[in-house]
Length: 231
View 1 (cartoon, rainbow, N blue to C red):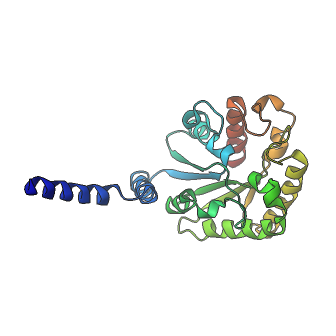
View 2: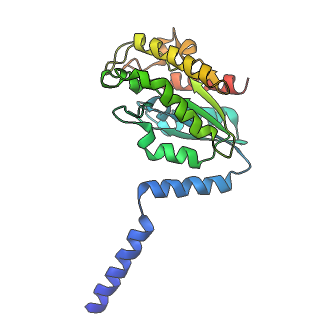
């Protein structure tokens, strides 16, 4: 019995060391991908639920980063670092800065970064701090600019809203569009993708909640980004 207990203890110790934490596993996966895909152009899609593919029946295949991968082909590796509910502002209710996806997007050492963050900052509990938005966005851009990969950085004007969800309205989104333009003016090396203008007047591209793109919308969003980044 003592021998069996000893084996059990040793096995548990190995198991705990082998599993580690979810963030360390994700980091290892990113590092492994870097070595495998070092000859590919790496594209990091940074964002919230719109990037993640919230509401799509098969977000793994139908999110805009997945569709962008199809458009770009085998010479590129597009990775989705979108995660729902995250804010761009550091003092928002759920900052992107605090999540493993942010750390892993840096560890990915992308050649191209596409940032589409800010929609969750428009929630009532967050937008009263909007004076921090431009500075925090510039700080985020700086983190990617400092990477050894010398990434080309694109920032997106957010998609429009065709209703109201969690206090997010199209009027507020228009306000944010102006702030994204200010961010671009302050960081003249970044490039802007006008998602807002190109997804306006297309209610059919959005789900019932009027905020998140549906499958058709995600497909068109990928085309908008593709045609801007690789015209």
